[in-house]
Image (cartoon, rainbow, N blue to C red; front, side, top):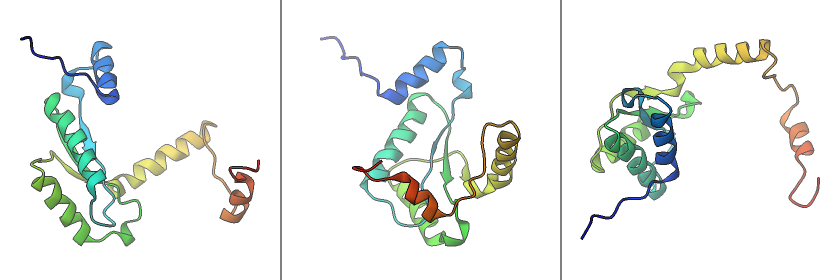
Length: 139
């Protein structure tokens, strides 16, 4: 009996299209981006398996990139727990990164986009923004 061909998920389709378009497998890099503000749950396990599975499928490195957009509120306890959970699931990451490591670069890009007229800084307070959103039944 012939071996059944595995169907691709939508992310794998995108990767395959990129490879056909000329991207090299050497350019591939994946990441798992947890927020270190709590313990992981079953949904995180699914994401870990997806992201690290892509790394295995395409023989590409996978970074553990903590999404610490508010570093003052993040706790080392959660960082350590996340790392233990990823290892418990049988995965090893290539690099350990933090979003906060890139704040200056992100800020510089934002300034460039604003200067190019492709972004703006919103000056309304949160109440004004909320008032403009409407509701599911009201425009």
